[in-house]
Image (cartoon, rainbow, N blue to C red; front, side):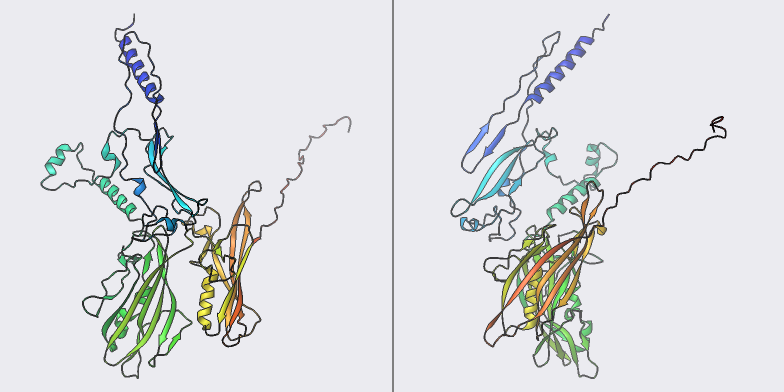
Length: 556
């Protein structure tokens, strides 16, 4: 005999299964929006299932509830818009760019901008360029993307979960009310604080226009200070350098000459020792390299030092108040990427001398920002253009592809009026490009934290047999040695050694008043240094068994 409550229990189970089946059969709506038109396809719910029950249960209702609403409009988001009131190159979503600017773009640096991809349906802004039009035009589309995952967010039943909530820290006035609303004995506010801290860290994952440039010290984070005058011409050291803010200031500093060695503002180490954070509040460190040191004598003659070692202000003995190696000018040059990070930093110094008991030192400080053209950190060489002029196509460079031997060059015209040191510096920068790497990844997927997977680049300088007063770099040869690593069935390419050879040659004699042409070239060669694989064959089997005595009796 069955129990009386069993039919009602089966009825409840069948009703639940029908509700779940009806909910799974519904198809979400897909919307595609353009600039001037909107097309929508209404959702068609699937057929509802009628469960076999003894009674007549209530028909299941389709799920209802508020759809997730994006916090921000994806059409107004633009992560590559770094310069205010100025069009950024290849930034198709920059509102400051006009149709004339779009016509000279080569590509869209950020082609797709999407909202939260965890939603079942979310907006996406797609940017592209139509090169068939004359002139080329930007194409913008606002579409609805469907998330095929079964774990996507379809209904928003708890709106505060879409954003981080600032936790309420209890005090003496709200402690009793917090204890009544809390379900536990202890309030777990540490997790909420950690969530807020992580959100703030994500918001500061890049530099924005005007943000103070952070530096890392052993004690606590600081900023890159750039002295500047306030109400008077005297220098004040409390002004940090701002991101993308080019500045050139002059100020006066009154110092006692006998204490020049103790004054940090007169020393090179004070401006070259800070380590810049490539990204705010991160462990990405960018050291400041000394690009050049120029010394101005007392008779105002300038001489450039070959060595870039740090010099400290020194009070000469035997001289009546003469201090040398005093910083007079500081010129910073910082390279940044489109993602809002700093990739390299250099500084140039002008040193002088002070005399007397008390001296007024006039100092000049400059900082300039240059956008890197190698945002992906690739190894590049010269780009050969149709003009064959080295400085005509100074911007674009050709990326090096693994396994492809490449060679390119250009023609450089030099005048006799150009100093040899300046010409050498320009040609070296032309051959190596921006941010020439010091290390190269052994594999194509080497991670930065795996130190053993990175190979140092060895620099070699060679001189040809040409004679002349000026030795000019004319070629850069990159030799990449690689080997096959792993199984013989599926070997992987592994770079084991990289050598960068800079070839110098004597500048040919040119008549006064004329320009001389010099051919500058760069080449890449890949050398396979894999050892020949030797097939390891096993020895043929041998029987080491001994038969008992008399086994073949009476036959042997």
